Image (cartoon, rainbow, N blue to C red):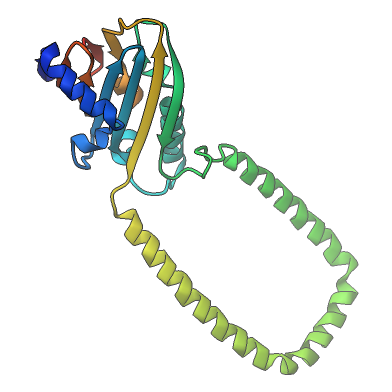
Length: 249
């Protein structure tokens, strides 16, 4: 059930609209990091609509750490697809064109899209590995004599390289300690807050952009509560939703 709706008159809304549009609308300012909760801010000025979405990563993908299995990877890919295509969860009544979009989703590469063929690459690598093993078995019989010669040579080299081996072991222990420290740092980072942010700018043919349809709940299964602030030249609406619906603003 959608609840806690407040609407202000146009006289009150206009000064608020001016302040909001003077600086970018940031839904992150609406509340602190809360699991299961997302914030949506909308502002209209003439034919322009600005929308900002912010949520804890847990509210969007169901976790706040690097994906560890296929289910978590698929949740990340799905959220990336949804946030990059607002038409999947937002329906505007006027003919509106997306002019600008910014999406910040954790655990993706710098381009914002993780390699989705990673599993396919792993499969190819596995096939090459099997081929190499078969090739090695074939080579083993052909080079058996060479192997015996190498064993004799290795015994001779063993004494010469004993000191180098000790040095390498010490170096490996040092590298292990450094890796352990980096791992501890990463674990500490994983326990911190991780957020998702997205912003959009639309240009519409008409100023008549109310009502609009929001379908975030059907697209984001981990979302439990959506806090909305919508500001237009007509009114200001502050509301909380627990399901998809139509927003009059």
